[in-house]
Image (cartoon, rainbow, N blue to C red):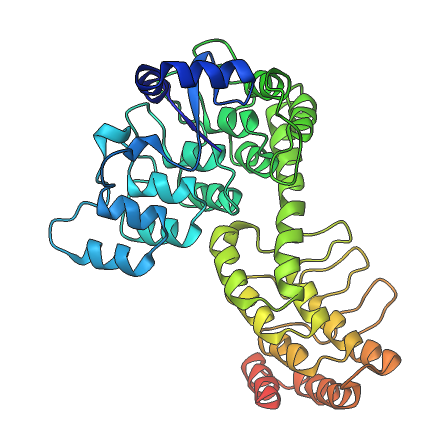
Length: 392
């Protein structure tokens, strides 16, 4: 759902006073109050461009037409930060963020779009992503923050991205904004905190209920827990909770070997590539366990730690060896995994390969045995060369 500022609401009421009043009376949330100002929920037909054509670059961003965005920006004189003043002064980056189009966001940022550019109402692209219900809007929030978006930016009514996320029940966006410095105590021009907005929205609209994308109850509970904490403890809480979500998201893509999705996610979650689940496993552990060598390679290229350990001190190499995945194990060894690393129970990867005898365990055990001998070579450069020759 998209929430526009006072200008859009006033324009709609002027054009359709009876229809607007009827929607409000029927309680369909056509008009609601956000941070003390009347705002509009935009439906299938977006009134920002009613009766006229959207500027081409903005339309390409809204549709995530990467080829067209590239062609347009390659033209002399095209401004990547072009604003449509009549529709609210948003840029292509605002619209890509609003739609959760992370590839378009990344492309526009690569072409030097202003990550903190302002609309007429003072919205940044981060505000647009934080309030959105698009499928990948939380990914867009993470990507914008990674690229320098200000988590404390304020609109003309002093609303922060965290206000937007809380008002719209965006749990993941709420967590990452706090983890990256968003202020849970920030009050807007009407004295409302993000918690106030979440509570207002969860009770004021009869059509409001938690679902997969909107979780007002969870947002309220998280903010209630976080607000009394000291700032460092609050950030630590949000960071831990956010990384659990990242781990689950990346692990799901890794276990299924969905490489295009992993590439997209890693662009957004590069700062959290080693996020651990409750067992201490990282996405690299998951890729190794499933034998997805290409997924593991993507993670390693994104600087995943090949020496990360679970709660039982298993490395990704231990997991690959236990499951008998030779290609994944060789990749990890080539990338510097320690062949002699031991779990809490004292097992090496070779021990696990021979103990569990899964899939390609014989070839894997032979490889690990030879690699162990090569690891004893001196000096260090010769050792690494010998191991990598075995991988080839």
